[in-house]
Image 1 (spheres, rainbow, N blue to C red):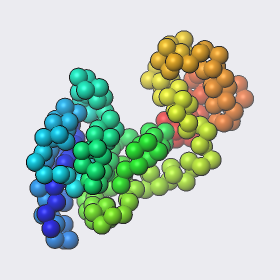
Image 2 (cartoon, rainbow, N blue to C red; image 1 turned 90 degrees about the vertical axis):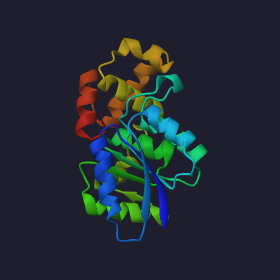
Image 3 (cartoon, rainbow, N blue to C red; image 1 turned 180 degrees about the vertical axis):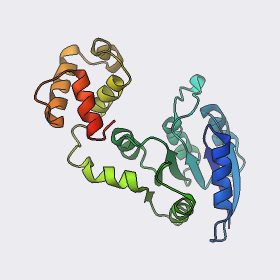
Image 4 (cartoon, rainbow, N blue to C red; image 1 turned 180 degrees about the horizontal axis):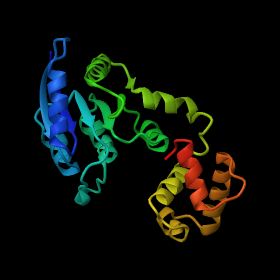
Length: 218
């Protein structure tokens, strides 16, 4: 059985490693692999390939393609789903933060997520086989985070995720209204709710970030 594969990662040796590992699968699959190392190369592959992809392996941290407003790997997922509706999408990422993984699952519902620090060769092969056969595969870190998502669902709502992410990037509170298109009072209310949800009685932005990191959210 021949499979058309797209592998997207900004480090060529990593793609070669994945390709070599999967080439030695024992399931009888022959792989025809296309490699892309940026959002632009991935965009071109998605739209120019002659045969539809069966599986897309996608890293999240990629050089952007600003002309098409593609800033990271997750911006490519809707394009894959539109142009290659039958393709299985597997995220292979160094990101292990709960809030990032929650966003990926909630907004994009991929067929698999593997955290690079979690898996070795045999698990990549196992995940590959599970996904090809129509299953879903999450590595250990993702599974552990998923157990707590129900109780943390309010922390994980879209605006709260963005507030935490922007604060973690060093953005000051005074800049948040323009970036999030919310009033200052609305942001202050959300930060007060975040403190309550995180179990903080009093504190500033750094205290919010400290507790969010402690709970594995960012």
